[in-house]
Amino acid sequence: MILPILLYKNKKLRKINKNIKKNYNILNIINNMFDTMYFYKGIGLSAPQIGININLFIIGFNNIKKIFINSKIIKYSKKKILSKEGCLSLPKININICRKKNIYVKYYNHKWEKKKKKIYDILSIIFQHEYDHIKGKLIIDYLSKKKKKKLNFKYNN
Ligand SMILES: [Zn+2]
Image (cartoon, rainbow, N blue to C red; front, side):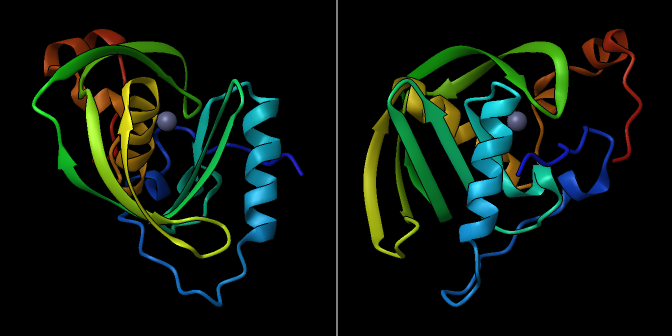
């Protein structure tokens, strides 16, 4: 089922998203998230973007289709990488963001298997973007005040 995506002014996007328990029924949510992400041609989507404040996000591009539950970034590389990012909650805007090139993460997959992995480059960038959503952060937060004004956003925070 395709769901509406919350836009940047929505307060639900600013909440800290809590870890979920194993008995929490997420399969339906995950399916809806993939339907929604593919429909809007995104490459990642977090649960808070569809109004559910839990630590869950998905990534899908090329042949990659991944589900991340209760994620945590354990380590960041020193090497950085510049990325030009868009967000389904901020249509028609791209922002240059300096990300860490590689990260070391832990999470659960949809079968509740515990994973620890180093992830690289584009996947690392998308992971950091979605992980920001889990922490209530949006790409506009990387802009200077001046640039924010230029974009003429009205903020809730
Ligand atoms: Zn986003």
